[in-house]
Amino acid sequence: MLFDVQPKTSIDELFGRRAEYLSFLDAIEKRRNFFIITGPRRIGKTSFLYAALNELEQEYGIPYAVIDARAATSLNSKYPQRIIAERLYKAISRKGFVGGVISRIKGIRISGIEVELQEKGFDIVDVLSAINEGNELAVIAFDEAQYLRFSNEDLTKLFAWVLDSLHNIVLVFTGSQVGVLENFLRLDEGDSPLFGRYEVRISLPRFNPSESLEFLRRGFEEYGIDVNERELLPVVNTLDGVPGWLVHYGAHRIDGLTNEEAIEKVLEKAMKYVQTEFEELDKLSPRYRVVVRAIAWLSEGRGYARWERIKGLVEEELEEKIDEKAMRGYLSKLMDYGFVETIGYGKYRIPDPVMYRVFRR
Ligand code: ADP
Image (cartoon, rainbow, N blue to C red; front, side):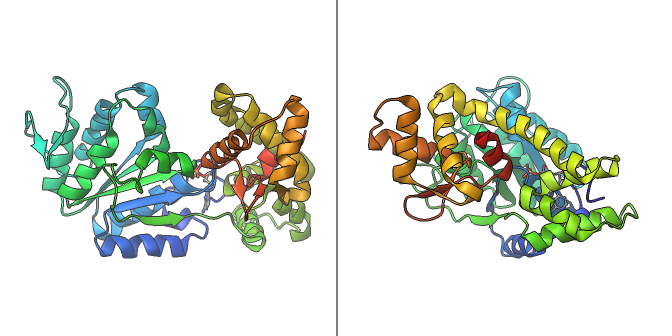
């Protein structure tokens, strides 16, 4: 059901994303082994990931494991390798993956990369090696992979080793904080372990207005409800093609709320969500909030705001001069987190419709 608030897990449940799925499949067939799936929050990365991987498993017998990087790092923020190994081991025992005992390989050194071994529990190198040996092809995906940067272990070394040596393993990373993910993977830096690897990028865009309308119409149809499309226009405009918000709206309508009540309810919930997401930056500096607020106020109707005016307004708010470098730093960090985007030289906007509203209040 389209209005199901959980991530979708099968291609049949997924609205759209056909081209993205075919690109994924095509690259897998070409034996590409490194994928990065990006898109703003609630755009459907987790849904796309599970739907695509379940399809690969069912149609082509390619097993997969998905590791929620947020959970892995919150369970053991500094040393998530152990958690990752445990999750992978559990996945191995699932149908499709090779079963049986994993031989322990002690003190391994592969391609000059030293990989630390744990004394107890599951060792990630053993588990990965077993997956590689036991499967013609297997996919290991890290959802919201930017959280792996909190690890004290250099996971990029481990990933580089997998890509170079374990040719039956495909690595997939998803991330909503695209810049943060890129800073972690460091693909373009000559001295980084992953430098020079060929990655396939799949980006998931927002639905366009017609797609949003069709999404809602089909969602209601599944419940036998015939809605007036004109009534849906304000919803489409307010929630601007973010599937996660559209689903919440639909769910509220199904639960009996009126059109206005449902929009209001989604915005209320979404605002709380956005506030929590922003807390990570609040901890770094209260100024990020001031900058986003300035952009929101200057970009009437979710247009864009110009650099000079943003700087001016921020200075007015803070009652002090901000130097150019610091200002660029704030904007660049906000873009890394996906809270702000640039649409041309010196022009900035807030891509998430709900975030825009939160900061206009
Ligand atoms: P993300 O991982 O990007 O934050 P999710 O996959 O968790 O997004 O999706 C957020 C919500 O939107 C979920 O309720 C999910 O069911 C729904 N959703 C996202 N994309 C689609 C889609 N293509 N078709 C149907 N529902 C979707």
